[in-house]
Length: 380
Image (cartoon, rainbow, N blue to C red; front, side, top):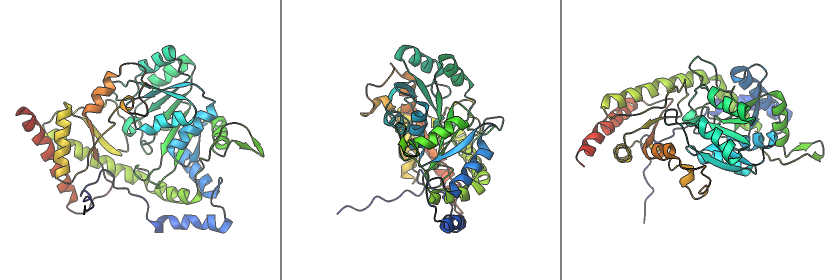
């Protein structure tokens, strides 16, 4: 009889969702009004809080059931129909959302330096593949200025949607909060994200598009009329209550993760194994710490050593979406940067809190794994 696999001491994700005593008081309003969904008072309060924090002047926030649902709702609200440029080096939810919106994902290569959608590849996809929209992904929640890809979209006259699922709580290098790029930015509040509400998400965009998203996310209803394609992408009051409690402590939460990610990076650097990082990453909230190792074998060695020490790191994003069964044949052409990075990038776990003694154990395991990898490779 097989036994359950032992959970690693340091799992890849250690969700830090607000405890019930911090969010249950928020639910009093919902119970008093018997209002648990359909744009209730907590949802409206959360949207106002997100907009005050992350939206530029003239933008507002729309909560959604998930970031994936949010992406679908945005594309439907924009009236996007046809091929859409998407990076191949990303989590499959991005391409799934494009397909669910009735569009065809065209998988494009990323820039080797930024690890995000190459502006040139996006421009080529619009010109050569007839793409009618661009979905850019803030890979790993990175928070760089997206001016180059915004310029591509403006020049081509197509909408730009930014999948910022892992970036909520982050900012550009100058401190500007993310949420102000493209026609809309979409965030995730999934339990594994830094802003963890269990599930849910938000779209930050201009008021006209926000109004369309609210309609699309509510079955495309306008009174009794169904005005077009739609879905149920609404956030419940229960999720909003958890998110409001999370919003109260987000800044401290993010700063602790940034400090821990910095310590992890120092440990990797001191170990001597060359590691590449994406350039101009801004100030991410660090859902995880992504690093590119010298080769696929080095990554495999490090992952094995970490697993033996009870640390669950993961290859990310691997394989590239064009190498998966669901999206085979969707590539815009050869994708050399995606193939290279998907062979070499791993993501280390980043935590908000650690028990006494855990920090030293985790740092020691990372240091040992990165020190051992060059020795093993030199004996090939």
